[in-house]
Length: 174
Image (cartoon, rainbow, N blue to C red):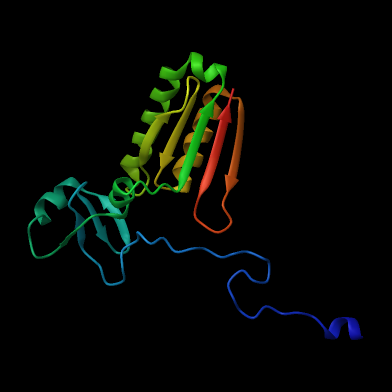
């Protein structure tokens, strides 16, 4: 009976029971009460706690008192070089077909960013002769791009998540 008397219960802290750190809030997300905003850089609109693209509505609302002019979280992350995802491509196969792979990455990133304001590539940097590092504004985009490359060319794909920050490192090699 003494064995069950010492049961330890969670003090209510998020994730403490299972050893999880809990979700870290994104410092780039808008503050509470910041409704009806328009990004002055990319013309994305913020309404009902969502960022979205609507060119016609953005043109109609631009310069009026109905919206606040701000810089969206994605544009701020790009300007300040704040990546939440890294995709590293390497190997002899990559070196041989670098242009083809980079074109696939750009097309896939453009397709995703046309649907989601928050997903954008920050930089694509060549490291040496047969390695490329892609920095993204979200973890999801880095994972998506890694999976797209894997689907197209196979190879080895490895994901490594940070336990304390919203950050993922994706490694693809072939």
